[in-house]
Length: 358
Image (cartoon, rainbow, N blue to C red):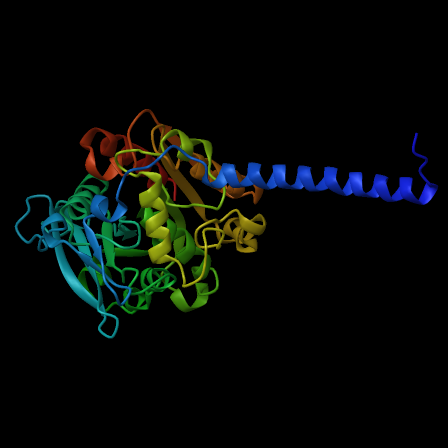
């Protein structure tokens, strides 16, 4: 039998301990890696899915046959609309929607309309205020809720990465200065809300945080709250709904990831605060919402891959004592409230109640 010295035994014990710790470390790392990356095989080409072509200079070509645009409406029986330049240097503009009742005498002239500043969806990289789906959504919103809608044509990524879109939506000084006659004559500057769908809801959320630093500059325009329709957020770790709907026909995970790659600042990952509002405990500015009298509406649906992200966002609001109304609609899909008339009607009932309580 071999005899071991005390020194040898101690050395062996230390070696064994280090080995056990190393094995557990790599097990933990593998578990974390699998949580982030190990998902069912995806055969979806995200560029083909989105009908875009990457260019060598980092821009993308959007196939126009899949992204048509329509002009403003001057002959609609219910809603009028027009385009107004916002910032010629950035090429941004707005499409303003006004209910016909505001000018035909059937709406009381002394009752000015709530102002809804709207940001369209499209993963930060697609669509326009002139896209048929968002034009029609805003037109119906205007007539059904009797509001004045300002739909912002913000700069798209990757040509203009975030936070460009946030800055564009917050460029509201031209509103308060009364440069447009519809806004000046019919808009109620004391009842303004920021509203967005999908990526537009992300834009509205971040623009709202920026607006908290500009309250005095924006007066007499007063923001009263945010309306976030299926807000588009992400993160490094996968959520249950993302994994469950990894190959969702409307928003597969590989497409989700691509839009963030194209939209976030160069070298930023999905842990960036633009993508993950929960990171580092969320923005300290959220505690100011109640001080400003702001309220928040969040609307989601069961079959949206981003549902768990929206649940996390609502929990963040609640942890900061923000007054938030959260509605989860049965079934549906990401973007359903803009495209489906029945779901849109459900949404308008929620928004009518919210706007009526401002």
